[in-house]
Structure formats: C-alpha cells, structure tokens
Amino acid sequence: MTRPVPPPSGAVLLSVPLTGRSLVQHSPADRVPSHGTWSFGSAHAIDLVPVDGRGRSAPRTWRGVVATESPAAFVGFGAAVSAPAAGTVVQVHDGEPDHRARRSQPALVLYVLGQAARARRGGAALAGNHVVIALGPGGPFVLLAHLQCGSVRVQPGQAVDGGHRVGRCGNSGNSTEPHVHLQVSDSTDWPTARGVPFVFRRADGSTWLPRNGSVIDGRCEP
Image 1 (tube, helix red, strand yellow):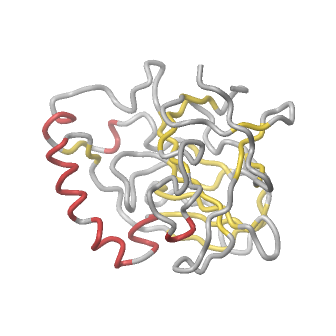
Image 2: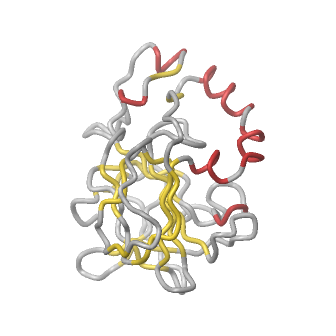
C-alpha cells in the first residue's frame, strides 16, 4: 500500500465525482504542478480514469497497440459525473466532439505534436466539454473537464448539491482516453487563475489525497 498523504493546509474538501473504480493519474500528491504547468489554474489538478476490475481502462486490442480507438470501447465513456461539492454552476461548455482515443505510441506522438495548437485555442480546446462550480460567491471554483458531448445537464446560475449529476465522462478536449480532469482554482480568468489544493473526504469525515497509479472506488471508502 502507498503511504497516506497529509492534507495540504487550507485544502478544499471534495467528494470523488465518479462512483466506480478509477485509476489516478497526474496527482498533486506526487508533484506540484501535477500536470507539469502552473497555467490555467491546473497546478493541483488530478485525472481520474475509470477502469474495470482488472485495472484496465479498456480491453487490449491490436488497435490499442498501433492505432486510435473508439472512445465507446472504454470503461469510462458515458460514466456519470457528479458535483464533488455544493455550489453554483458558473460556466458550462458543451458541443465539443469526443475524439478517438490514443493508447498506441504512434497515435500519441501525433497527438503531442498538436499540443501547442490546442493551448493557443484556449479553454475549450483544452478542457473540452466542461462544468465549473463556484463553491462560494468569490470561489474557489471546481472544474470538471473532458465531459461527453451532449451530456451536460446543468446551466449557469443553477445551484447544485454534492452528488448532483452534471454530465458524463467523455473524451473531449485535450484528452487521450475517456477520463475526468478535476481541478480547483481561485478564478475563472484562466490565463491568470492559480490552482488551489484539495483533498477527498471520506464518509467518516477523514480526508485523503490518492497518489499516481492508485485505484480508488467512489462507491466506498478507500
């Protein structure tokens, strides 16, 4: 087992936004900035990749080795995504296509070459379909990104409780396979926003922050 990570001072308390098993990637428990950049308020972001009982995001096929794959072949595609805390929806974006998934090295190389162009296009190209929830009148703000096209179920100004369905897991934006990107920031002015630390809360009130490579289950306490 990995050693527990002490909660950062002043960390925002959240619930896991997915109810099944998820593989943790790019966790701020391992490094900050977790995604290798301080930009767009993503310094403390985390990625949750839904997986099956064997820890796989999708069955292994020849396409997964040499080509792109349909996002529908992945465990997480279409999985329900819920608000991780109570607040007010302040931003919604939908309509970005769910592009093909990329696990093979050839497909990944081509994808990486387009990274700079996506960054220049701004938030929609990076986050894809997404929802932003303000936890208070002046923030902080929770971003749930890479949602499935057409799945967003909330509107700006709508109050939501923790656990309220906001959309479904997809592969839109800067995403190589279906997953949920979660981050907390101090602003929605993304070019200047700063990341805010967070932890997940268990049913008994204790908190934890999962490390890279760990598998968590939103249906039960880790």
